[in-house]
Image 1 (tube, one colour):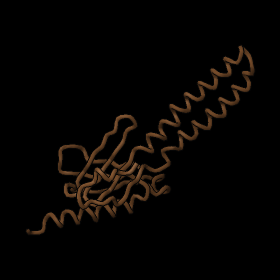
Image 2 (cartoon, helix red, strand yellow):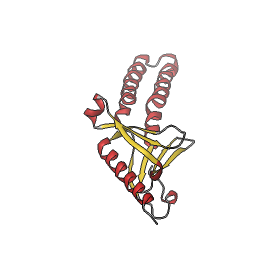
Image 3 (cartoon, helix red, strand yellow):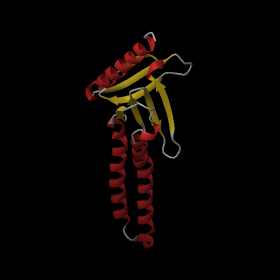
Image 4 (cartoon, one colour):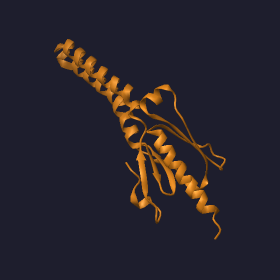
Length: 168
């Protein structure tokens, strides 16, 4: 879900919307496959014993585990977005209750990124945005193409500070 156009300020444009890297869905995918295999196997082994209640119990348990440990993480991943506009960085997350954090680019003091070995292989990383406020900086974890995103944010922050420092 990208940032709605009704939430944009006058003259503001959306430059990029991203989610965390798809690598965070590897474990939920493996859980989904294991639940499907185990649930199907155990339901077939149960056969028609007990008027089929055992089979339906196994199927219900497998579906419940798959929903909780595979589908819910996917929905959480899909609805957690980072949007970079021409004036701010917006983080939005949540399924039933939406939360968000907005950092104006003119208030950013420092932008850095970090990547460990597997992040380097997958071309993702964590962007760290520091502001002058007393709140902790914003951590954007597992951003795909982190170098490009970092370069874009740094350029926009530089432009925001340059416009702010120009005499009137």
